[in-house]
Image 1 (cartoon, helix red, strand yellow):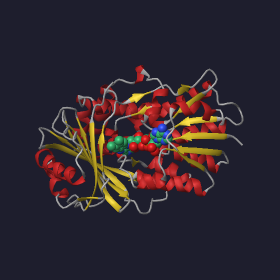
Image 2 (tube, rainbow, N blue to C red):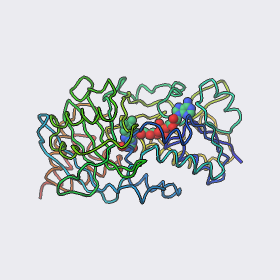
Image 3 (cartoon, helix red, strand yellow):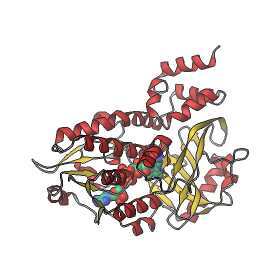
Image 4 (tube, helix red, strand yellow):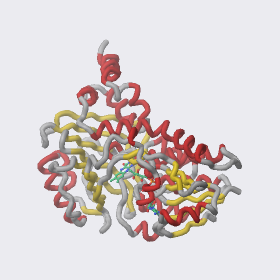
Length: 410
Ligand SMILES: Cc1cc2nc3c(=O)[nH]c(=O)nc-3n(C[C@H](O)[C@H](O)[C@H](O)COP(=O)(O)OP(=O)(O)OC[C@H]3O[C@@H](n4cnc5c(N)ncnc54)[C@H](O)[C@@H]3O)c2cc1C
């Protein structure tokens, strides 16, 4: 039986561990935290996942909270100009639903499931210096440790990493008691983009204490949303959020007035430079490890793709591991396996990096058209679930123009 070590118990590492376990592999997961520590810890993400990735979880029997979590059925995008004034708004209804399950709930639950099914979970924060000895005990070692220190094993791929510093400073809070959007009570994602200032996201989620609303500020560094360096506690976050809403997003203010933080660890602050890394980490002349998901492709959350990418990465790696049978997992196989994932990940990466810069004129035109045209709004919203489609129109000014002409004439 092939022995696989996975370092890191997030979306990518645990989905892969549980699906390999079901296929009869001998899997060890090393996690920096126990399930209890994860549940008692801070929120980690807004983790909105779209239906193709939710389907992967269903296929592996991992959709444990699907019936409790709200079904997110649409995406409303408002472009604000000047700040505090809504210029136009699009509403794209999705053909299937998205969901956001607090990673504290999901990762703690998946770790327990892995152990209940006989998996070996070791609770230990792995250091680079541990890896050479550890990897000798396994047929394959995969690093799925997110954006932590182990990324240093993997060189930055300069040609695929246009940014060398964070393009947004992030600040997130989970809330109970928000009031629904007037005239549209169904759970939906709402995005307000204020050019040059940043974005504000609202999305329904499911946390430790039940259904909630998740609010994320994506602040352009140095701008007025970038006011979180003192990392206020949840009550302080909410006060400041209300002030910002009053000034910059007044149409959301009233929805939040009566809300409360879900718990004492319901806030998150930070930011990171988007990066693509080379996938093979060399430990010695004869030992290498394979990076996965955020370790090798870390996008800014502005387009909500990272957990989705992690789920896709887990699926591609599963397929490549199973398909490789008993042959050695050498560097060439590792590179091919990552390349198969990059075939998918290059699309959300290109789209996300574009959305971090000044909103291109043709994208502004697409959004303005989508505000009047349901077909365009529908296609734009569905690109979040299938970013490869953006290459056929949105990523290129001429193709976007041709598409708009084809749906708005005749
Ligand atoms: C504010 C914010 C909002 C986001 N919103 C969305 C969204 O709406 N939709 C979306 O798809 N994505 C979103 N993302 C991105 C998404 O959360 C990540 O891309 C995704 O969680 C990556 O999964 P992963 O398994 O690669 O890594 P992680 O989820 O980071 O998991 C890595 C795990 O490894 C563990 N670990 C780290 N170092 C070690 C070590 N040395 N030894 C042992 N264990 C270790 C960590 O504790 C963690 O459990 C968001 C991210 C942020 C920060």
